[in-house]
Length: 75
Image 1 (spheres, one colour):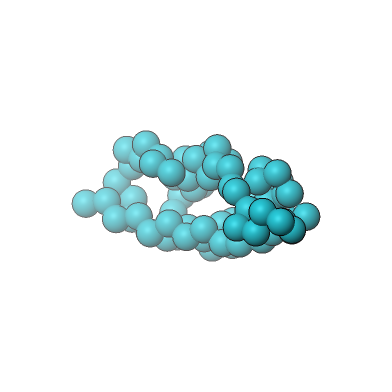
Image 2: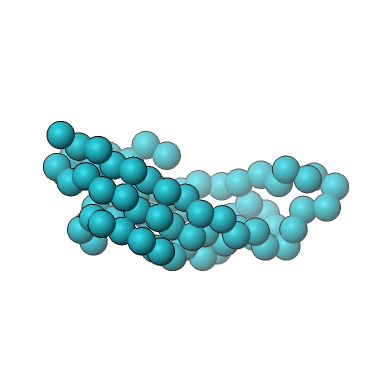
């Protein structure tokens, strides 16, 4: 994703996502952040736009869980 972040904040956000059988995000939770809630929401909205594809087309999992980490460096 390429969020439009006009803030001057730098830091890190770690999201945990759960994806269903069809590649749609059904759960998104912030595990860690050093940024303001406003900046966190910019990145959260971009993650929610994502869809995923199975790596095993013959037998995809009903649910898959993973983490997405953003390291933001604004000068």
